[in-house]
Image (cartoon, rainbow, N blue to C red; front, side):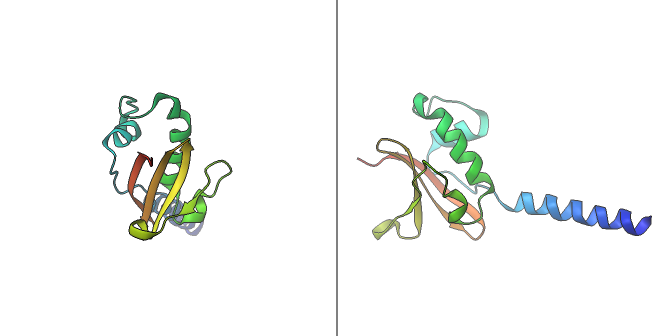
Length: 114
């Protein structure tokens, strides 16, 4: 029985470790960071709340760009000064942009690109 218990404990720790490895490292947009951390909506467009919750939940567990390739988000890579960054459609001209630092999402920004 000890062997089975040790195996279950090891698997449990590996699963917990794997979940904790993926995370959003930082935000560039203070309002989006506040919305993510404590649900405050004063720094975001109120009509974007539902879509932003979906995007942020996915970003929290994403470890590569294809993890964000969901219908309606229109994932696309950026070029030029933002080479290495990815963008997701929120609504109209509003986008979430981000990049990966290893298996972590970093520099998450919320912007109206026009």
